[in-house]
Length: 77
Image 1 (tube, one colour):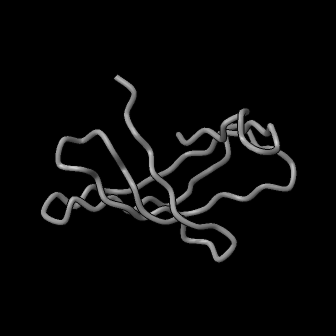
Image 2: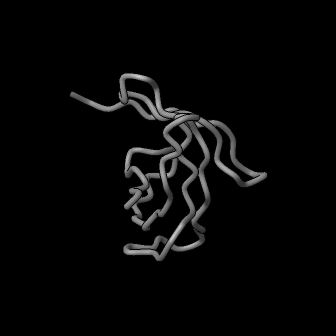
Image 3: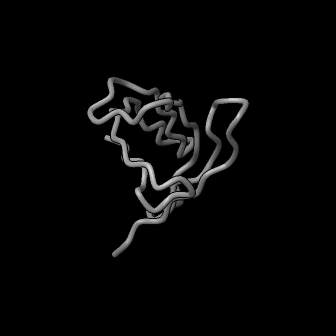
């Protein structure tokens, strides 16, 4: 599941499923969107493609939609 943060610029909350497989040799994790679990009005799901850091703490790459850009997620420990 991939949650939209209620702390984003519009204060919108939503959750949708994502599916993919980790390509270990390239450390690549492409994700395809699945079904909405909690859908906010006027939003659509998007695919993501990125790499996972060697220590597994960061997943960074790009959102595969022309209206979107890069992302970086860091595991909170």
